[in-house]
Image 1 (cartoon, rainbow, N blue to C red):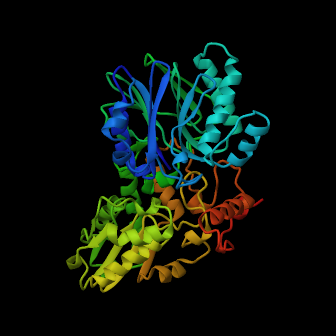
Image 2 (tube, rainbow, N blue to C red):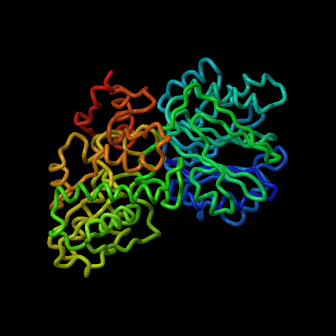
Image 3 (cartoon, rainbow, N blue to C red):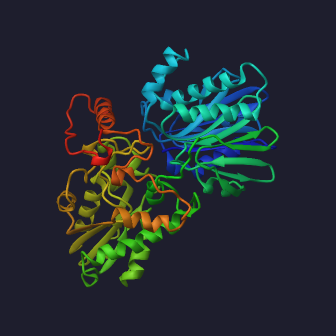
Amino acid sequence: MCGIVGVVSSAPVNQLIYDALLLLQHRGQDAAGIVTQLGHKFFMHKAKGMVRDVFRTRNMRALPGNVGLGQVRYPTAGNAYSEEEAQPFYVNAPYGIVLVHNGNLTNAQALKTELFSTDHRHINTESDTEVLLNVFAHELDSATRGNQLQPADVFAAVANVHRRVRGSYAVIALIAGYGVLAFRDPYGIRPLSLGRSKDGVMVASETVALEGTGHVFERHVAPGEAVFIDLHGQVHSRQCADNPKLYPCIFEYIYLARPDSVLDGISVYQARLNLGEALAKRVVSTVPPSDIDVIIPIPESSRPSATQLAHLLGIPYREGFVKNRYVGRTFIMPGQGVRKKSVRQKLNVIASEFKGRNVLLVDDSIVRGTTSREIVQMARDAGARKVYLASAAPPVRFPNVYGIDMPTAQELVAAGRTVEEVREIIGCDALIYQDVEGMKRAIGSLNPKLDGFDASCFDGIYVTGDIGADDIARMNEARVAEQEPQGEQDTSRLALPNAMEG
């Protein structure tokens, strides 16, 4: 998961891209980068860190031009600790291309081999974004054959990218001297939207980046579609996939996106309200409402679900945790130790809301269980008589291969375990999960035109159809080698449903 933005304008774009990246900061806190173009020259600055730390006044002054793109990075592929992996990535032929990418390629290793042996292109990092850039550059070179670039050539190149690349990808590329290209994978797993202002056109991961920079949202980029914005601000578009389907990642609505965004026609805020309504039925069947004195959200994504749940059950809603906004989102912090240490730095309790009460805590999801266990203990330390925990999402039982950092069984507390076993690990008095079908109905009802969702981390069904048990095992081994090279992890608990085996 990353945040990406691209813009063509009649005015300088450096501050505009910076502001958009601030609005997308929740999508990635590891690194940030901006590229602008003046004439035929690119100007780039990228580094590890938050947007406000990466870009100082001197850096902004060195980014001239009326066209550019940017990215905030949350690493899921490549070396999370290497500044070389920060985006944008650049290749000098054909024309000169810089590219940013949100997603995860599932066939990156096979493509890397093809690029070296067949396309004669060199990959210098472990990033799948560099792989994607070189695949696109090769296909664009083949489409133009040295001739003047036309939008039709760009669309032909994207069509061939779709045929070669597997996985999730929302992409923005800047082609020197020609304009900005944006496209989504044929399943639309990762979001991308387009908006206009009086000065130009912007594409970004979420509508909040458009609206927050003075652009009027126009539409979402369709799955498989390519949109090319030339340097005059004229928009060209074409469907480049053979059989596109709209299966957006359901975790975007549960946790990843900002509540004030609209993704593929669905208000993220309304989706979370609907999840709270569906969750109410699950809570009533597990814990009598008369046994609950107060409902408290675990900040911040769970607030809409918690308010709706409290309203429907007629139970007081209270804020029991104060969040330190200067600590990053614990889910997207690399390493269990960092996440565990940051929980009490990130949250502090309002003891009067817990003391002597039976408390129902509401979280958006439970992934690793580390944060949940710490928070339940904090509630008990504050004097809660009983601590119940409800998750607006179902149990996360399977790895996500499309750009969310949850690939191994050891990191998924619900993988291969019953709800009761998870409850014991977390230490709460009752644990209530959303059910998978209830989740899909709650969010899907907001846009009946969707073909479905990528809900693979909940149901183990991978919409791209190219992921099997061997692929999961390979990803697990790679992650173990990368993060804990001297230890061993038990992956025996992680299994795909029968329909996905082989």
